[in-house]
Image 1 (cartoon, rainbow over the protein chains, first blue to last red):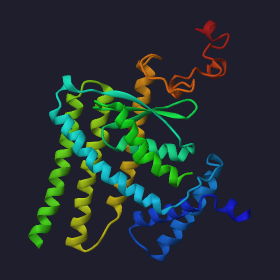
Image 2: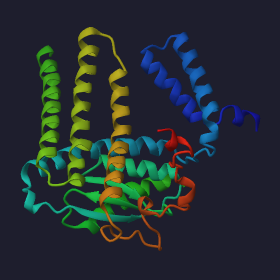
Image 3: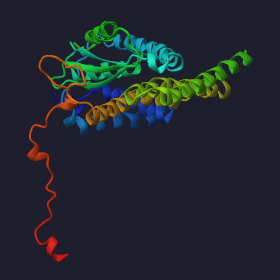
Length: 164
Length: 137
């Protein structure tokens, strides 16, 4: 289709326009026009590097997901601060955890990996060669299986609803 | 009201400073690279975040003009912090971890960083000096 070749990533176009308006800190006609210009030109010029448009079902769930992750980031900070301050080095139990993935879209896996790194004492280190598992490092995990189940239940299940 | 607002903003600044301090202390205290990575990716990110929220509130309420720059800085920080951590972790694993140090991913796959290169001949740059260069010296 002609339109989809001209505007390969509509959401990216919208996002770039918004970011430009926030950078300019104004909603004047000039800012909107130039933002829209960037929003149209940048995705058009870079579309050969990003051929597939990620399919997103239920965009409203993204907002809920972002709020959940923000809440978890705040809690994560308290948890990590407590571990740093009060758990002695000898009692620290770092662990590697393998998380088998049901997510298949690369964008969804990236979002999941980012969320894991930003939240309680966990950090994504590697992805497997077939992209069916990720390797997560835990700062302090007396029970690694519980951490794996929580990540699968809390984040991956929600992401599966957004990226089918 | 004014007083409560100033206390709120100050509290955010102090919390931000404390979080930054704890993150830095974590870098010193934790035993190895992988555990050390945890401190700056979380604590410092939120520490900067609270300082930015304080700045946004202050200029909004005190000077009457809202700026979105702080919001953008937080968004970019939250987007880049996991990527930085991921790259440091990958480089660390690449340099130090052997095949037996990590749990296997299952399904007969290997971790992406430990994959043998598909064709070493292609990627090998030709570093031999051209003929005649050595003779001239």
